Amino acid sequence: MKLGANSVLFGAWDMEVAFKYLAMAGYDGIEISAIDGMSQHLVLDNWREIAPRVKRLAQDYGLELLAMEQPSRDPDLMESAFQAAVELSIPIINCGPGGAADDESTYANVLDELGALVQMAESYGVTLCVKAHVGQYVYNTPTSLKILNDIQSPFFGLDMDPSHIHRADENPVEAIEAVITRIKHVHIRDCKGRQQGPGAPEDQANGRGDIDLVGYIRVLRDYGYDGPVDLEIIGAKAAGYSLEQCCIIAAEARGHMQACLQAAGAR
Image (cartoon, rainbow, N blue to C red):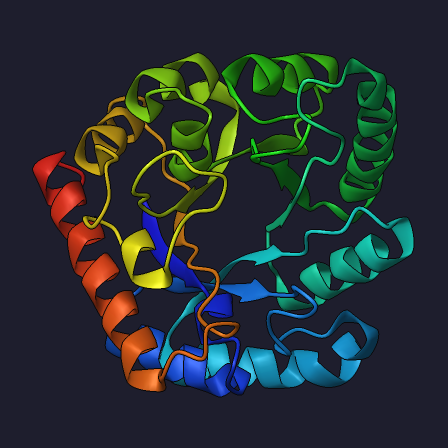
């Protein structure tokens, strides 16, 4: 497994800040944020101008480009994301599933949107992943299995996020086995409680919440998962966190992730 972090944690700063401090914290790679409003890192309207700098930063700081997060399912925006991914040799793009939880009338649109995007992903040779997301149609294990069953393409997979499964009143350690064969990316973070949001940024740091992340990593290891495990901490920019706070969160979570891998015999 490759340990990375989403640059959105450092969304208040220039992209190089994320590369610099994630490398200092010992991460293997980085997930580039293309999340409008949360960062100005990979701005897809200008990706051709930004791509050479991303390549240079990855080389200078020794971080592999593990994934990109672009939550919108807008086809034009997503096509730009796929084009940028090809140029940067980014293998995975993560987006949200859309629709509304427990509202079956929204599923047809979810399936149509994602199905079209998966066809586009295949044409570019990039894998599209979605995760179970609180409030959206795919939000728990049964709905994850439904979309995975309906879209069988090898260019489509699950971005498994234990914090969302936890907030869907499931045990992530038990839930992961049902979908393990289709997991192609892991967004990892902790969570205190089962409220709608993931909580304050520091409480999302691995080891601070209620999720058995040691057991979670162990299941990944037992089933031979060898893809990215990317920390995703949101809310730091909006809450005005200092650079020091963000660095501490990144380093603390990286230490916990490393300990989990060691405990599971994966490192």
